[in-house]
Image (cartoon, rainbow, N blue to C red):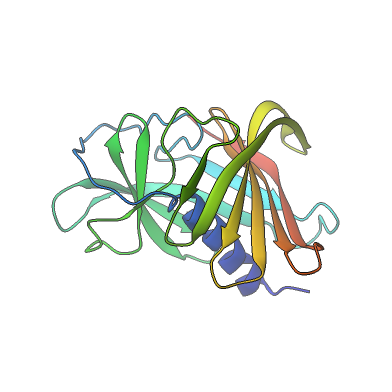
Length: 196
């Protein structure tokens, strides 16, 4: 069984992987809301995930706690977990969002560019990603229609993640798969969320 630190590391890795699909740079602005429909980022937004087979386990919580500035002056949103792990999210354009490990990481890594389409693949620092389907996902937080299922094959590891993104919500289900055995290592589903 995973410890709380392992579960948090897993969740942060998946979110960071989502946010690191494409490298790039561009103009930013100081808007209060990043309007990417598949990862809504605004101060106060939060996502709570549970293991559906062990709902009594400590949930994984991801939330946006505030705003700050990167070293180059770009506005960034502070992303936290319940264990206080932290990263920063900034906006590049209307359809692109950057993840920064630190405030001096001004290049950052991008999550995706819209529009998402089934069959689209891209290479990122963490691995190769592909949009494989549009599906309905049932979670304790509700039923989400037309979710993009994205597979991420992690470089140099026998690990693949499947992540389902719902419009105006973000990730609603995350599955970690051992690619050698094709067995599911871990699953997280959305228990509740708050997006503005």
